[in-house]
Length: 203
Image (cartoon, rainbow, N blue to C red; front, side, top):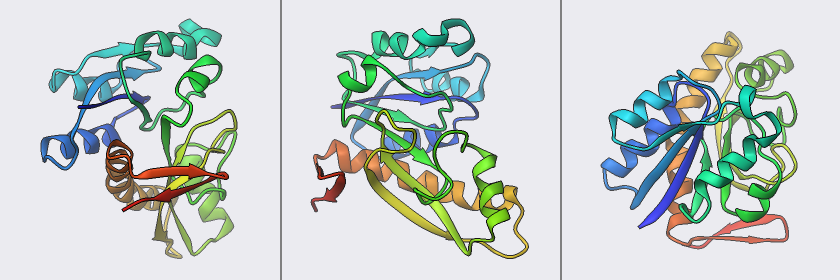
């Protein structure tokens, strides 16, 4: 059984999409742990309701040791770490220990509206302000560069003239809920190859 750990910061709707995919037999995986960088978020309730182990590694408490604590929890326990709306930045040994085994979902078409400071609603506000006709979401591998790892999957979403940032966020979120489980499925089935900074899907 392919084992994953999921990192969260908020409501956990992307976590919910993975749980649904497992329950619907679309994913042959188990979630071994859900880790939040702050207490009291709804994502933890979602996990606990399904009997999944939860941990709080509060970045206010652990500060520079946050990533090391996450590594301590997940080392030798999971095959893949999934950042599902996780807003803290991973660094240090966990990136080396889980090289090519950490993925993130970002709410834009990387490299547009990505990098340091670009997260959550800020991404959509920037897209609306720029007047782009299309945005979307990206699943990418995580490395030392913020939003800089190899791109695995992308989904394009149209941007309407009258859209608010919230409108766009909701439209993209629906696609995130499809894209993230698909990425986990491809990786769990050994269908992703990374070469020369790019990914190839082997069907």
